[in-house]
Image (cartoon, rainbow, N blue to C red; front, side, top):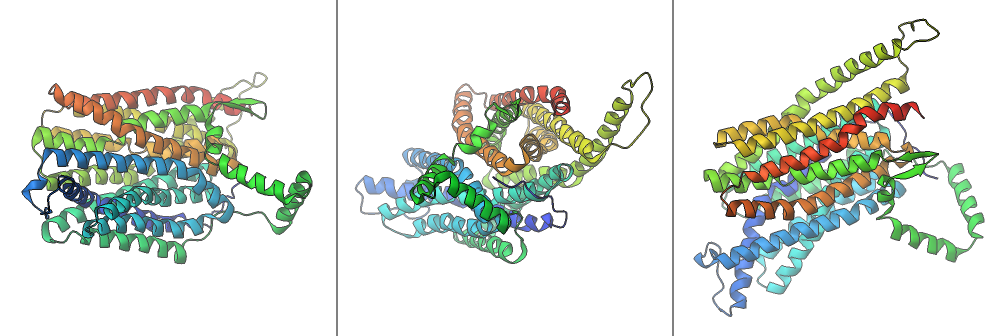
Length: 509
């Protein structure tokens, strides 16, 4: 029987923030360099296949070939697909292992596994063996998901220790820092590209950040998972032995079955089901809304690079600064405005709920004005999170619509500035997801959420990429952002019923 998460106010959630920052530096600082290396490797591979003995070097004009570019694009798409598959499949195992052994051991090992990806693609650049280069590229695609899983683990720590009222605040801080990392990395990448003529420098920065994240978690982050006491563990073992008749073979089979069931166990939680006499469907609706919203937004950074380059002739350095603006504007909203919205918005909603409760008749007499108890205030906080998630997704949809109407790059940047006000969708989705799940299943709920997010990351690039290619053919690339805004609108439509039904559901408990 899993233990319910403890709510420990003494646990320092802020110590998780440097860890998140260091984990997000690595994949972002090497993004542009990865594109350069893959193109060069595919150039070498292409001309080897053509039977030439004179292998092109870096900057060779023979690499500026349409077939080479097409091959590089296919490899990058395959690496992204492999990353998405590994991320989707690994989420439940990471959650299961962290439930069994604790969050901290995996937070230490996750960034170290990510160094395999960082080192593999750099090594592939220097080796001359084509087969070995392909093996190293596959390792890159497999282990790059270790970075995202390392960032996923702190969200489990927050679910372990935070109350309903504090959860969204902590998730918004983590989301802000998760944006600060890539924003800083894009600036560093642009400056390194301009002033340092060495392809390996960004990778050394990434490796240093990943090792630093592991060291930080080892020295400064405490375990948040509450394990059963010795007496509870012995009781559970005796109950298990009694039910299995003391059979070691039965225990082995049960262990194998548990491992095989791990990928689908979190998904069972979000599928509509009956539990304790009630039909639970809210998690499924929130998951579907997250899938639609993420499918509409996760490809926007890449699509923006293509759109600004094609329509406004942006150079790579301009693109890097645009990405920095995109991430830092969202960071500023999450770190400055979003906490104020949470604080005053929840207080206002709590007063509204108190006023509404006091208007209810009670034997013909008005209720006296009293303070609401903690459980009622936490229920109000959860409901306000649903409202905040809805409006965040609506803002994303409106901003993407404005991008599609932009006639200059300044208007595009202004639309992205508006989109920053929708940056609260990710932390509120996490908080809403955990609030709808039973307390003992909070880590499974976050694993399911991460699987849905990974599935959207896997589906969005092929879908929106194909749409972008089709819109470019007819000379209307801006229509891609209208399609993305449509997906966000569908997400908002799915969330809307929860605004009106959640308080009624809570009252039936």
